[in-house]
Amino acid sequence: MVNRNLSAKMLTRGATKRRNVELEQIIPRSEGRGALSSKLYKGRSVIDDFRCSGALRVLFPRTDQDLSAILINTSGGLTSGDIFEFEATAQKGSNLTLSTQAAERGYRALTGSAVTQTTLSVEDGARLNWLPQELILFDGCDIERSLTANMQGDAQFLFVEPMVFGRTAMKETVNRGRFLDQVTIYRDQILLYFDRVRLEDDLKNTLSQRAIAQGCLAMVNLIYIGPDAEAHLDTVRSHLPITGGATMIEDDVMVGRVLASDGFELRQALLPILDLLSQNTLPKTWRL
Amino acid sequence: MATVARIVMNMGIQRIMTTDPKLLTLVHWLSPSYPIGSFAWSHGIEAAIAQGWIEDDQSLKEWLTDLVQQGSIRNDAILISLAYGTTDYDTVRNLNATARALAASKERIREAERQGTAFAKTTREVWKLNLPDLMLPVALGYAARLQDLDGQSLTAIYAQSVLSNLVLAAQRLMALGQTSAQTILLELTPLCAELSQDVAHSDLDDIYSNCFLSDVASMVHETQQPRLFQS
Image (cartoon, rainbow over all chains, first blue to last red; front, side):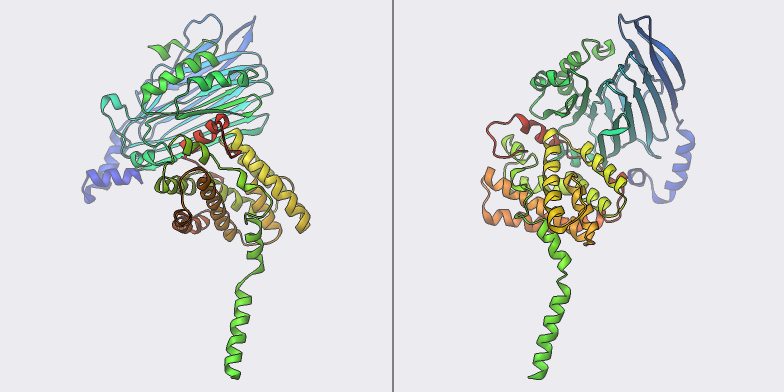
């Protein structure tokens, strides 16, 4: 719908169809695929299996303890027709931290959605930290994102996916766009957490609505599954702005939702929380 | 005279025919006097008012509109509709897990779980149904299926009963007169009818919520002091 509206606005009716065909031919599609698994070897977490192709690259910075991987989208952003698929497994007893080199960008998309799909598995006694930097949406974006995590037994999991609707410091505004997002977490095959967002068309107006965001332009979902989750609840709450909340949906499952006026305010709230919950192993790319 | 009597009699019959007793069962289940304790839950409204996110008639109406059009009330209606549409107990159990996983906070889980359990207990005993304890929307949909009631009426009446309960909660928490409260409900009523049509043929893929601040409200309510409501 959005694409049709945008192109109709920009082009005369007669030229629309021909022009869209041309655009489809001109705009290069980015595809990126990757898979990574960690295992415990002589008391350390190391790479077990790794492959990647297309516009997805992975860096492995040296760290003292856990295996850390930094994902890079070499195409520089997400637009129509892009497909990114990534799978990661933290095998029994191993620790794996995943982040991105920089914020991801969802650019104006004229001929369909960009699709990103992530599948994470965390085995018994393992821990996985999924800590991508912000997804920054631009006017006219069209993104379908989904993440599924499969937890086993006493696996631990830290998850954040921060979002920014236009960089206010750059005077960018997201008026229209489409953003579909889904996060599904299973533990021992039982559904534990399910969240789906569907923001379409007039995003600026939607985000200004009462029960939605009252004009906040940045938000994050925070999930932490671990035996110490409840012990950290009060500290996490103390770092939240008034438009943020945290709760325990199970004895060891903390869920938070934070809204902030912009990406900067969101980061300020998020950094101490991520330091706390990641036991100070937040990848350095977060502070560059 | 005979003609008049016949007309009166016909009207009488017609009236009896159009008032389906099954509809009355739905109204019975969703009336404030049905012992599920709905009066104790504000669905985050108490926190939203304390934070100033809801401050007057207009903002209360906007907040509730969001819940119906792209939030928890819409998702509940979908869950009711899906639970109503099945006789397979495994599907019902999966829907119950979805209802639980969708709940934004500890208090949201409790709200749906405790009301659902209370609903199932009374309905099971009074109607002699094989109805297990389920989250409220799933319990309602499944019970309506077991009693062969009208699913579309159920979602509309459910949405209106939730809104009515939340407006009542707001009346206890902010300056909101009787007339304004009932005016808000009147204005929201067409949305309930629209919603029940929209969700009649929906599936799990139609579930979503954009009501982020409503989720935050239900989370911050946990630490709010003093408070009147359990959510």
